[in-house]
Amino acid sequence: AQSVTQLDSQVPVFEEAPVELRCNYSSSVSVYLFWYVQYPNQGLQLLLKYLSGSTLVKGINGFEAEFNKSQTSFHLRKPSVHISDTAEYFCAVTVSSNTGKLIFGQGTTLQVKP
Amino acid sequence: SAVISQKPSRDICQRGTSLTIQCQVDSQVTMMFWYRQQPGQSLTLIATANQGSEATYESGFVIDKFPISRPNLTFSTLTVSNMSPEDSSIYLCSVGQGRSEAFFGQGTRLTVV
Image 1 (cartoon, rainbow over the protein chains, first blue to last red):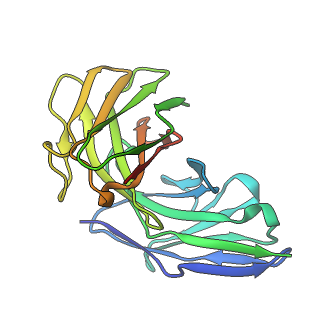
Image 2: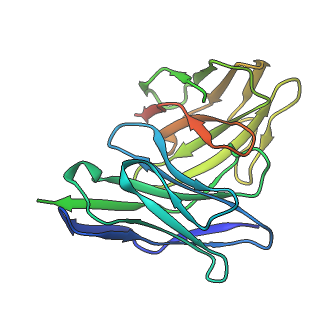
């Protein structure tokens, strides 16, 4: 079975500072990895995904993540955050050929302060 | 990409009643997925809805409580039956397109009083 652990439930950071949201996964087979963002009272939006190939993936809004197979990690980073990045961030994995079947981490609340 | 519409967007229901949530996709998809997001929690998969067959439920979820219909390749419904306050959650419909990404509806925010 697969599982996802987001190591920080809340991450407070000042505007224009860098941020890293940590995600570790457990799986005995190859996985596909995703980061989703959920703004208050809204649905989920895909930030970025790793399916194969380059381990450094770039997403929307200046976010990037690096897949580290040996560490079983997929940490999300942004060099300079904005107030508008305040949201809930979910790491997710699937081993299914249909990426609708996802296992989500517990979520990390990113709080960007002025 | 896929555009997913969910109805209703929110509802307040009395305990003991049932609510049916509708999910409409703008393209034909083989599988549709229903998730639950309890207050302050992450998303948990309830079931996978396949067209032409019974839904497949995840551990902890049963058909009597969460019956699902999938009459065609663009539509599905999830019913939350005999509701209690513990069913207060956001329910989300999702579709995946091969190995690309999953698309989510805006969710149905359910409050049971």
